[in-house]
Structure formats: C-alpha cells, structure tokens
Amino acid sequence: MGSLMDISSAVFLLIGSFLCVSGGVGILRFPDFYTRMHAAGVTDTLATAMILIGLMLQNPDGLVVLKLIIILLMTLFISPTASHALASAAVHNDLKPVLDNNEKVKTSNP
Amino acid sequence: MILGLYNYWIVVVLMMIGFYIVIAHGNLIKKIVGLTIFQTSVFIFYISMAKVEGGTAPILAEGIKQYSNPLPHVLILTAIVVGIATTALGLALAVRIKEAYGSIEEEEIQEKDNLDC
Amino acid sequence: MFAVIMLSGIYGLLSASFFVAMDAVDVAFTEASVGAGISTLLMLVAITMTGRSEHPVRHKPVLALVVVIVTGSLLIYGTLDMPYFGSVTAPVHQHVAPQYINDSMQQVGVPNIVTSVLASYRGFDTFGEVVVIFTAGMGVLALLSVVRRPKGIAEIDSLNKSMHEEYLVLRIVAKMLIPFILLFALYVQFHGDFGPGGGFQAGVIFAAAIILYSMLFGMSTARRVINQSLIQLLAAIGVLLYGSVGVVSLLEDKHFLDYSALSADPIAGQHLGILLIELGVGITVASVMIIIFFNFAGRKNSEQNQESNES
Image 1: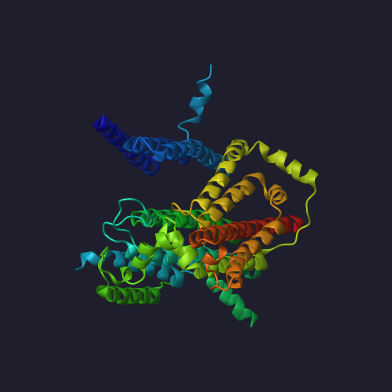
Image 2: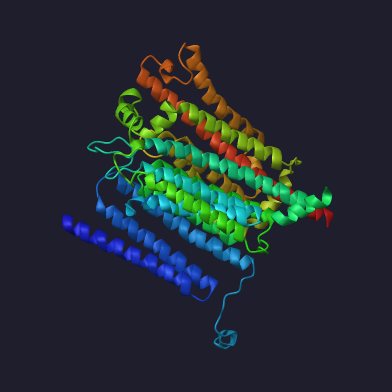
C-alpha cells in the first residue's frame, strides 16, 4: 500500500510537470494571443491541480492535506478568472483573433 | 575552490546588472526597476550566507539538529519592507516630475532645467 | 515598459522561490507578497500616469559599461576570501546566532526563531522599520494627495450599474474570494509565532484584498467603504501601539521594550509583548499600503477629470 501511494504520487507529479512544460511550449509557439492564453490558462490550471494531488498523496494523513485541498480549490477559482480577465481586457482593447478565412464562416450556415 | 564560491559570483553579476541599468538608461521608472534588481541581489547575498549545509528552516521542531542561521533572515525581512517603502516614494516622485516637467527622460528634464536657469 | 515591469514581477517571484530553497521561509513569504505583488502593482499604477513607452538611448553607453565591468571584477576579487557556500564553520554562524537558536525557547518560548529575534531580541530595529514605513506613507500623502469633493450617492450608484455588465464574472468571483483573503491575512498575523508569518506579511495581504476590491468596484465605492481619514488614523495608531508597549515597560522600571515587565510570568510577558507589537506592525503596514495605493489611483482620477474639464 505504501509503494502504491508512492507510485501514484510520482505519476501525478510527472503528469503535472509535463503539462507545465507543454503549456510553456504553447505560449511560445502558438500564432495568436488568444490561443496562447488558452494554452497558458488551461494547462497551468490542470498542471497545478495534478502537482497538488501528487503532493497530497506524499503524506496522506495530517493537516497538510487539508491545506493543500484548500489551495487546490482557490486555484480552481482564481486561475480561470485570471484568464477571463486577460481575454476581456484584450477584447476591450480591440485585439482581433486571427481566423482562417472569414468567408468560410459565413457560407457554412445553411 | 572556485566552485564553492559560485553563489557570491551570481550575486555580483546581478548587482552589476542592476547598477548598469541605473547609470545607463534615461527613463526614471527603468532606473527604479534597476534599483529593485540591485536590492534583491543584496538580499540573495545575505540569505545565501545564512544557509548551512544539512540545516532546515529556523522553526523549532522535534528531532531536528541543525538549523539555518536566523539572524540574516531578520535583517532581510526589515530590508525588504524598507525597500518597498522607498520604491513607493520613488514612484510618487517620478509621477510628480512627470507632471512638473512633462517627461520622465533624464536628458529632457536636464534640458528643461538648463533652459529655465 | 509594460514588459519590463512584468519581468521584474517574475524576478521577484523567482527570488522568493530561491529563498524557499535556502530555508528562509519567512523571507520568501515577505518577498513573494511584497516583491511580486505590491511592487508590480505600484509600478503599473505609476506607468498609467507617466507613459508606457520609453525613448531609445541615443548614444552608446560605453563609459557605463566600463565602470560596471571594473566594479564587477573588483567585487569578484573581493569575494575570493569569503567562506564557502553552506559551510558550518563560517564566522556568521558563530557568536550570536547559536545563542539565539539555543536560548530562544527558554527565554521567549516561541517556536519560530525568526519571530522571536525580530520581535523580542531585536525589537528596537523593528520599531525603526515600522516608523520608516509610516514615514513613506506620509511622504506619498504629501506628494500625491488631492483634495476632492465627496460624490453624491446617486452618482456613484449610476456609475456602478453602468459598469456592472463588463466586469460581471470578476466581481462575482472577487465577492466570493475577498472574505477568504482577509481571513487568511488574520491567520498569518496570529500564527507568526508557530510558522512563517507575522505582522508584515499579514498587513500586505490585507492591503492586497482591499486593493482588489477597489480595483474591481471603482475608487468612489471603495472610498465609501474605507474611510480615508480612518485609515490615516490607523496608520498612526499602529506605531503608537508599538511605542506604548515600550513606554509601559519603561514605567515599570525596566528597559524600553523589555516584555517581562508586562506580566508576572516573564514568558507570558514575552508572548503578550510579541502579540501586541505584531498587531501594531500589521495595522500600520496594511494602512500605509492602502494609503499609497489610494493616493496613486486618486491622482490618476483627478488627472483624468482635469483633462476632461479642460477639453
């Protein structure tokens, strides 16, 4: 049972680190502001959640688990709100998203 | 011998970067940012001196034999808060200079002063 | 300039994580809240008034580069005598520090050695620090305060409703989160004895919650919630509380800020003294940060009003 906890905690931490790195790659490589923000927001929230769950499994009994659960809840509230604030600030300043071809959007509606 | 002192050299590099920003750039806000970098490098200097190999955070707990030195921590706590106070005052001065002279570039302010005198 | 300020905020956060790696948890807490939070915020408010772009440097700063390189090499030459990183026999770990580590539990009775040194052994330095923060708040007040006429209540409500649609998600989430941020600030204030925390961090977190409220709901609403003169009075009350603890010790025939004069049992006196002065520190820091932010933002608002009145 002890080693099952260790292995699952290690798996969660590794998934979280991979998501952090892929979020960073996305910020650098995506072509447009909105897609970059999507990469940062989504992967960062999920990566933080995975890392926190991995840390919770490291030491399952104690006050630390409760504190980590509260941190997880706050992150799930705050991080998408921050992405929303960024996106609405960009829309407010008239930053248009790069779309493929505007005619395609019109003719796809029957 | 060389490898044991790398933390001081990182601090010196950061300090010199902050110093260069203060003397080479003209924008007042950028100078204040350079001062912040300089301050943080001094904090890193003190805190890296306080670290003891094999020690933990200086909070008394059962079963821990070696603690890191708490005295530099106290000094740097004071220094951080005093640093933010002086940064706030510097930014307030920069705002007032902008209102009085119309610009926060060092050269334009000096030109305006030379014109007035 | 915007990118410069964001990068300096990231630099502050990275140095806070460095402090955690160096076992300096109190310092990391303070640096994260102050360097990565309040400092970035104040610089952003400052560049809304001073302009976002900077003029490019016209001449090559060769002399500056030479001075920097010479100074840097002299400093590196000076560090060749320093003790190695992490060595146990370094001079900084002899003399006073082992005395603090060994005697702190018997003399002060508080597990967090940094708090006991900050509040009890070196309490006078902390008093000077609180006065410096108070002075900075007064300086910002003297430089940036604007006399304004109080707005009518009907005017403020119409402003609020007109902006409600735009900020709906942010306002609802903030309304849920701000009480918890304030509660966390109180937790940090009173648990500074047992873990990382204390007056400074708590004051900064409290001020951050109030600043979040005033950013989302408008300055005029925030001024109705937080009375300006009350905040200025509170800043002075924090410093007075700290000083009066010292004066009470003087009146009991002991040294200034000697906490054993506050109670019959010296350890209980130390606990009471540390509680009171941390409270004074927290009140002053929170009030001064709020004063600084409100004055910066109020200056910006009055600038906008002046421009719209002239044009």
